[in-house]
Length: 361
Image 1: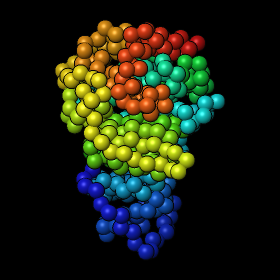
Image 2: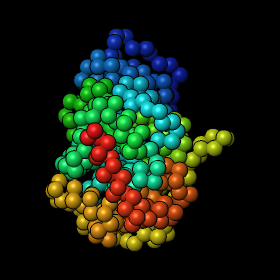
Image 3: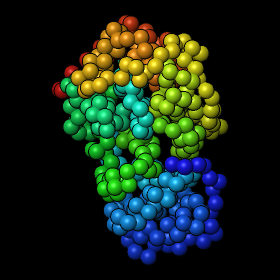
Image 4: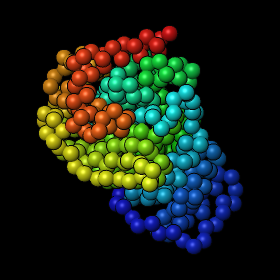
């Protein structure tokens, strides 16, 4: 998505002349300006309302893709996406709910973020995991479905899973109806757009705790600043410096941690090496499944503690991040240790079996 820019706002902004009109924002972007939060909200409100011309939608997405969106631009788009979401309302306080959804778009090792979610759930974290089908055919939705989890659960079923099994899977097409208005244009453009960043920032359950993997290191501080702006309680945003969109055992990982106190939110950026948090190194791509059946089996093998070393280490590393963001561990090293104990004790496997039972009931 290009390089970062310094926010550059004009003093005047023409209002749209018709429903769905994106021309005022397009003129600003063409002139080299950035959008304020309110201007971004206006543009994406028109787009997601379904009245914008496809040519204008394509122009907006292409202009924003020339560079990194600013915090204001992304915040505005997220606020609109959240206003259109089909919500998952539960008795659980959103400030304690965790989501481990990432952006995708990086080389696929295996389903580390979904395993991290299950392991966190086994330790009492309420996880509303957002996810979708993958271009590889081995994403979170496909693997869960292959293991017997029903993707077509309505919000009542999701609520039951979250409250009784500490884990709900929020299948993206069922929660983001407004995104369909941009889908044909996104497919026609054929390159990543700002919509690739919106899904992980738009939890249907309103999750205020997140472990987010991103496919480009430039997005790490950006996503963290947006989460901080939007009031996240605790979040870890990561990009493996071997190119993976998650914490990795193959290289250092760039991590931005968002924390919140009574005095407000803050962001801390650092690099984390596997050995610094008690994890053994290994190339995650070397154990990447080549079929859905293999991916599902690897998922089960990790929960049972019998997978290859690199798969186990990747899983506890990302689960450690989920446990930190979920408030169960003070730091990554403690989170990794707790994740190991969850698997070794059988708690992680039991939590997944419990989830399947509740989901099918």
